[in-house]
Length: 203
Image (cartoon, rainbow, N blue to C red; front, top):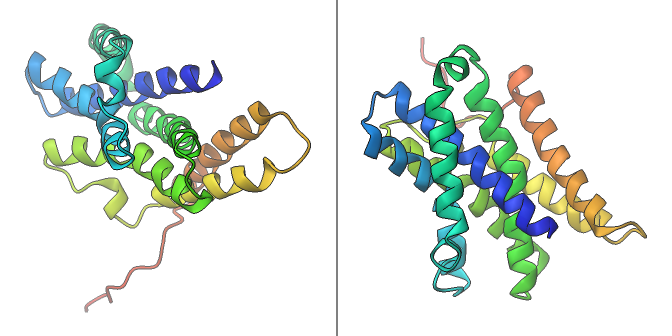
């Protein structure tokens, strides 16, 4: 039940972030839905294909289609409110990566993969929907820039495998890891933290 709730919440968060980007690019209604759709399920689709879980999740459970559709309608109706919140895209995207990282890790555990591979699946689930969204909207994906994005997913994923060994409820380990990912991303943006660049400044 916790896994399903996280997956639905992540779907909503990423779908809204996709709508915000698509509407800022002034795409038509079909374009807005497609961008929202690939943002919400792109990473999960790639994850399921990698572990051989086919048909992929959203094909087997129509609830995801209806959830995305509802998120699109909500975002369009309240877009004027969302666009004045300059941090809205960032916040929904950040919440989405926290939720989807743990969804991907749970999928990896179900497939009996090693912890490192589970973290990789979690990072793919959280990051690649945004990659597809940015490419479709003619932007350089955030994950390929110097901002801390996938790094937060990786740290949160390994944190989960450390604290899950403690005598605590698994639900707290999940929630703690999600919160850590969100905090890392928020702090990185707030204080301008980034990974080292390999490029030297030119005069």
